[in-house]
Length: 157
View (tube, rainbow, N blue to C red):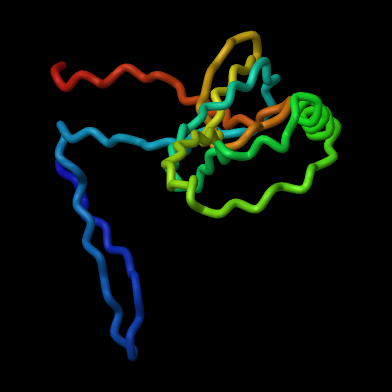
């Protein structure tokens, strides 16, 4: 079977016409059509949000002073009274330290901070879990994409 070639003008430049000559594709070549993805957005119901924490440790050096051994002016009653004042939020006048009984002591502290959130949610009856950078609240916006499954075309006939 004989096939004809087509002439298609593409662009005219200064009176000259450019022409594209198109030949038909070989008989065994298959063309794959890529379809744009079908996407829409909807909302899912959040069931549970669990923070994921990072634990940081920091060490600082603080002065720790021992009570002076020769000080007997505090009676048992005064110590109980001082404890009650501290519990009620009224501070006693602290005695100035001479610095002789003080020493630097390393104090280690732990800090926890949330770095992500594990979110359990339900969409159209199906349950999902995702790790998100922020707490989404009661609703979570989801991206829904639907693409048909197409069997590959066999090349043998």
